[in-house]
Image (cartoon, rainbow, N blue to C red; front, side):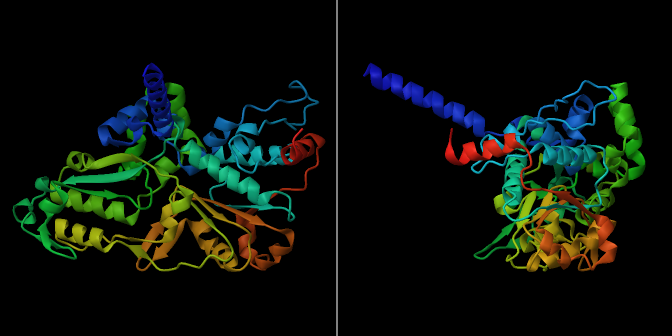
Length: 416
């Protein structure tokens, strides 16, 4: 009996530890706007980051600072030795062993992300068959997803939570019926006192503040003078003052302003929700193979649209978006530029240049990291689009050129 009790206690402890490992930090899961601003004042560099800064921070989370063979002297050529074990080997089903040449190319790219320099490019990793391109990209995206489940890997999107009893037309709203397949129920019966709308375009909550007020808000919010100066004047944070919310959030904001007439009431409906990065369902990360079917139709949710129309008793808010919205502030990746991926690549031309995509009659703002893999012989599929050339950045993945990486490949295949 004692042995069984000890085994049960050990099993319970094991399951509790596993549960803690699987659990995302609830503190950051969904918070109201007041708490969001308080957190931003305490941890501004964690809260205020777009996908480019998030990607940069993710890489440096897994990759220690590189070691230069030379001390910082005039002899140094910046050819640094980086340890990619945690990023590309540890926990990976199929490890990728980066040689020193590619490691430096990759880290230079990542650091340019952190400086806000690659926002209007598509990054194509070019290499011959067998150079490990697919393994590299799969491991990279898996670690991005894993990082998003860490306390350090939080990134926020806008989440609207509106109390229908605070609306001017509340006297009639609970009597309005919402039809389902089997019966009719009132809004209050089906949804309670609140309707909740998650921004499908992953807008950062700070974008809901009108542009002309954001600079003063950041200036008053952040106490640390050095960090404040960095956020107010560095290119990597320019998006805070430049970017606009999506058409859905913009319409909700102005509709609520008409209802309440009080900006404070509107801000109380805004929540910050942790973004989801799940490659398998295309949230935050979408990967397309050449044979994947093209999907061009707009996406909507009839139930959500009816709920919005019924709640606000107007049709000003169009709940419609494209498949690109799922990876707005995320990563959109193409595995090999051939077949249907040629069309996907060329369709990105205008989006990367202007950051705008048309969905029926509305404009959709798109800011993603666009990645792709390409074999040298497939470059002919897009080289004739001359205006596209300055939007493409090629990063070469050659066959392994240093013996340490080659030895690691053999050890992985054949053991010691």
